[in-house]
Length: 210
Image (cartoon, rainbow, N blue to C red; front, top):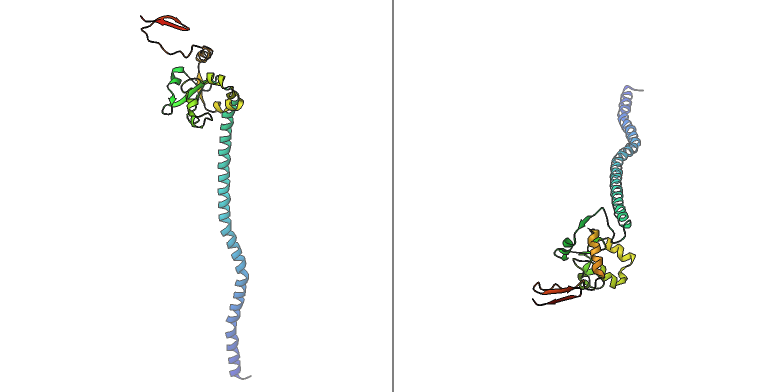
């Protein structure tokens, strides 16, 4: 083999090595690239997934706490109502005088009524009353006992439960007894007479000019 051919052959071999190395390296890169991408993708998706799971857990915990707290509060309120019959004394509520109740006879001052020993704020219910607002307003600032004696259809568990849901307090036992005594008194609604009259009798009222 001539010297020229040896030199040419050596140069040719050296010129072919880099392309081969490039091909091998490129092949190795192609083989490793999916794996690296997979790991990179896993890391990228893992962090948002973890954050999402954290958000869901926190939200679920908050909702669970809210529902539990609200449920317990409603159960307590319901049990407090169910343990007391409509109109009976409730020791967990304030006691008002009949004078205080009497001041609440309009929407401006709130509309209160009594039933038994119970005091009820019926302001929002007045316009929804099946018999019309004017009927129920006859008891505003006073007691519904005489009306419910006449209209006995009110004396049902459903209506008692509805009324009790509007409970705001009590009246004293003495005031409740006073309402009952007036209930059976045919002269309870007699109008006030002029003080100048000479009263001969109160029931029935009998008087003469002075």
